[in-house]
Image 1 (cartoon, rainbow, N blue to C red):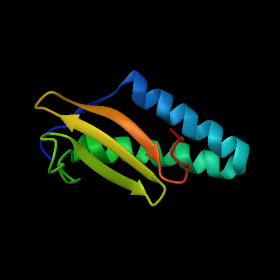
Image 2: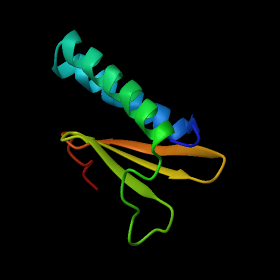
Image 3: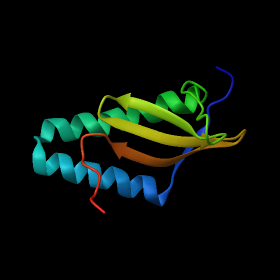
Image 4: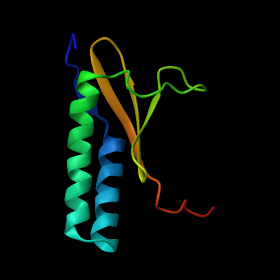
Length: 98
């Protein structure tokens, strides 16, 4: 481990995390909410130390997709200075109808 990278969360990713947390509060117990928060903290520590751990997208260069739980996917990019978390997706929630 050579360098520890700074992890930056975009407004979109923070709004995604809040939406997932609200979903968990509505549908599950406080225990699941705490697990989700801990999962994000652990992910940030791991990512700051090993930014290339997760695979790069084939269609979008530099975008990486991390499945941190069977129900949670995180999209991020990184350069030689920092890591930027772009979005978080809860795989349980249904896609909105058009």
